[in-house]
Image (cartoon, rainbow, N blue to C red; front, side, top):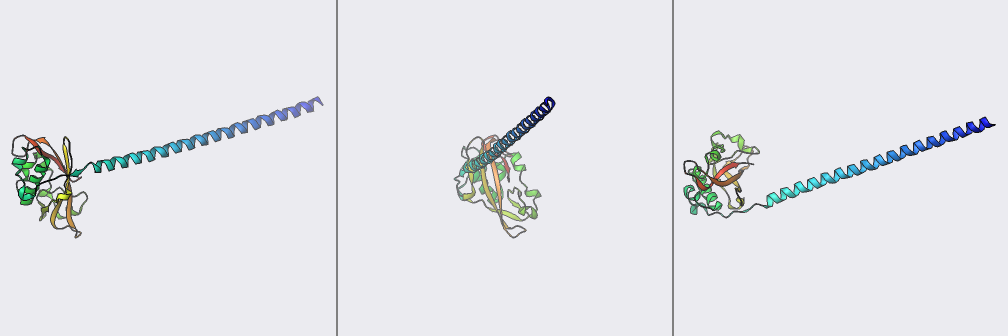
Length: 207
């Protein structure tokens, strides 16, 4: 009889042990799932927050540009005169007028900025590319015909940043009007063929 009771007691203890182990296992799984859910939620929140910050930064960068008032080409100074001023609008106006004339724009540029232009190596097929070439006077027979006032925008500061659109004659290989974006950096420097000046275009790109 005693042996039977001991055996029954042993079986009861084993059942209790098994039940405790199973309960602990379920609790661990539940805790792990909770942690995973919390981690996933945290990662999702971080991703969304990063996207929001990126979007806000892009919007802020774009909104920082403002219209730059420039004289008409007929009323614009020469590059030699504009580089002695402290007005980026006068420099951009002189630069535009020289490009429309087809000569003299080098005087608004440092030698480094001048070397960025692709006129000598530009081909007709390049005009449909994105990004396209940076064209000072013309590319493959397509000459600069306009830089519209409403495309000229800037961010004041040191240096001054300018963005504008250059329009060329004719159409590209896809039959579309040729409009090329251009970005300028303006600051103190030495224009091509001249002495150091108060303001000059120090860099240019299509991006």
